[in-house]
Image (cartoon, rainbow, N blue to C red; front, side):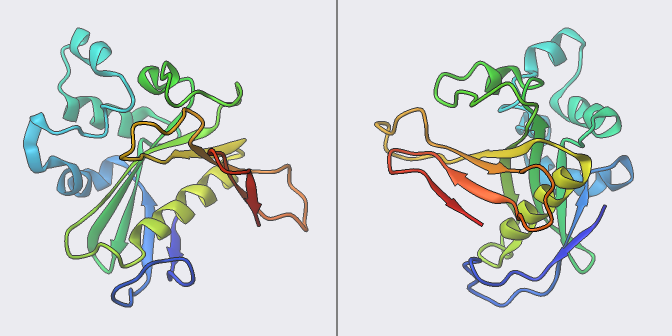
Length: 199
């Protein structure tokens, strides 16, 4: 699955961006995963911290890079999506499924809304020099399209605030309605303000 997006309205572009291609992280793209996540070598997060799989990996004798490489080979959906501009890898979006992420599933600050196996977006990473050019917007669109094609019941992402006083219901969920020709995906934002739905 490849998604090509030209960011338009809603993307806070400081510089016009050429087409961004979004592709799943696969083993043949492992060098690009390393380019995005390997800056701190084995000490980096390797998109594992929010998943809460470290204890399982340690028990199996795996480092974080080895755990992610195994997830790239075995997981469906893949553990992440990569963004490209031309031949350059410029972004990463970490993805999993609720129910497979012990840290997220046990979170008191990000409680699950229901028991549906929604796709969960845990992080975005955009390379320096490509930020504020619509890459994250393209990654989000690519993940939502992939989730729709896979028949996922929804896609969740989570807002992080500097203020510690925000309540636990500051989750953002992309809702994937039952297929209807006239219905587009809606964005449901749950936070202290009234619920808003945009289509």
